[in-house]
Length: 142
Image 1 (tube, rainbow, N blue to C red):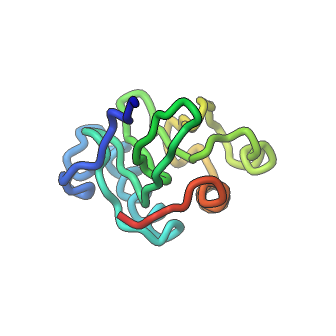
Image 2: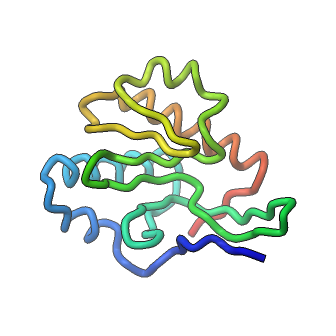
């Protein structure tokens, strides 16, 4: 049975964000640390070297693959901010239509900078993702 390669680490998320060279990514990362903690009710935890996660869930697929993964979070990458909403964005078109400038991946939203989006709509999206994820796989605090 295969497991997720991205796992929680002991690195301090605030230190990770504070060390970002790109000043806009650093400033946006600090805003996201507070926003995700406020909306999720969870404290941040690093997942792998670059993902800041909030909460966790244990999944088991029909294939037998299982593991733990962050319930929601973000990664301040060089090209953009990656925002993770589990279980994906398929049901969130109405919310996304109000978000602002973004691109979509399967469970990842790409934003150039927070100034391009409406943070209240992002709060709504994070909350909806957590609610829907918890219906499939119960969310646990870190």
